[in-house]
Image 1: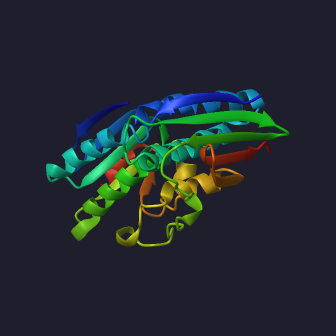
Image 2 (image 1 turned 30 degrees about the horizontal axis):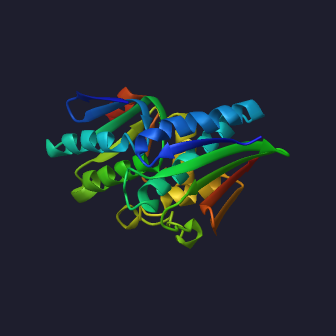
Image 3 (image 1 turned 60 degrees about the vertical axis):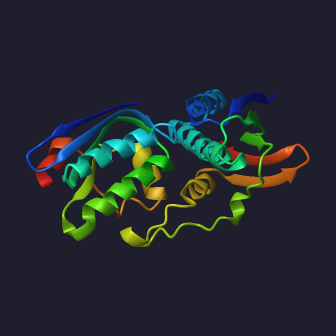
Amino acid sequence: MEISTKEFKHCDMVLIKGRIDSSTAPQFSKALEAVIEKGVYKIVVDMSNLEYMSSAGFRALLAAQRTCKRYNRGEVVLASVPDRIREALELAGFTELFRMSRDPLEAVGSL
Amino acid sequence: MAQTLSFSTTFDILDEIRTFVGEQAREAGFDARDIYSIQLATDEAASNVIEHAYGGRSDGRFEVSCAFQTGRLIITLLDHGKAFDPSQVEDPDLKAPLLDRKIGGLGIYLMRKLMDEVRYESTQAGNLLTLVKRKG
C-alpha cells in the first residue's frame, strides 16, 4: 500500500493506493494523524486507487472523523469511493458519518 | 475437495488468505460482489483469530480451509488458542451518532451480514469457525 499527501489551500488530501487491512491500517492511521498534527482538520481521502478496505480501515477513518469534527473545525470527506467499499461502508452504517464525493478535486472545493 | 492452508498469526498473511478464498470463489462462479464479500468476511474472521486467539502472539498458527459443495462455498478457520465465540459479541449500534459510535464488534457484524451462515464450535481439534456463502 502506498500513501501520499497533497496540500491544498484549505485542506489536505490523503491518497491511498492498494489495500487497507489490519496489516496496513496503522500506516493509514499515521498518515491521517500526521495531517491532524499539523493543525489541518479538513481532509479529503482520495480512494480512486483503493482496491480494498476492511473494518481496520473503517476504524482509522472513524477516529480521524471524530477528531476533525470536534469544535466544528473540519471533517474527513471520502472521494471516489469504489462500489465494493461503499457497499461495505453502508453495511457498517458508516455512510451517514461521512460526506462522499465522486471527484477528489470537487471534494477539495467543498471544504 | 477442501483445500487447506496453514498461516502464522501475523497480519501480513491476510493478503494470501484473501487470494486463496478469492480464487476458490472465482472458480466456483461467484460474481465480483460476492467474491469481495467472501474475501472481506474471511479477512475479518482471520483478523479476529490473530488478535484474540493467541493473546496477540505472532508465533501461533491457524488453518483456513475452503471447499465448494452443493452450491455453497464453505470456509473454515481452525485455531488452537483461546476460545472466542463471535456470537457472544453484541452488534454495534449503527444509528449511534459519531461520538457514541462503538468500533468494537464491527468486524464480526460484517462477517454475519456478508455471509449466509456463521457458525462457531469449540471442538477437540480446536476452535472452529465456519463461514458459508450460497451461490445466488
